[in-house]
Picture 1 (cartoon, rainbow, N blue to C red):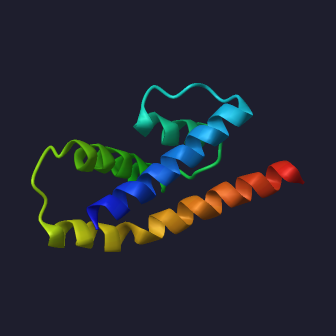
Picture 2 (tube, rainbow, N blue to C red; picture 1 turned 120 degrees about the horizontal axis):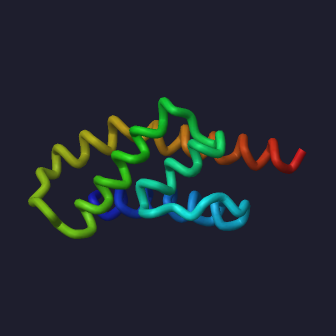
Length: 101
């Protein structure tokens, strides 16, 4: 479950990085900054931004095993934040559709 959450977060980071690179946006300083750049460019909303930045931080914790996680807590976080992945995907699709029109 932890690795699935990690992989989903990394997919968002990869999509963001690819978009930033292909569009020539400013280079992000770190993973959290990827989402900040997307916000600056009007791709993701200010409401979603803190959630995505939090996910990037959580990904770092999962990857580096900073703490022992309670499986129930990780599951709860995933279940609570699952909609953020959908919102991110919708924001990316909306941007791509605007740019291709």
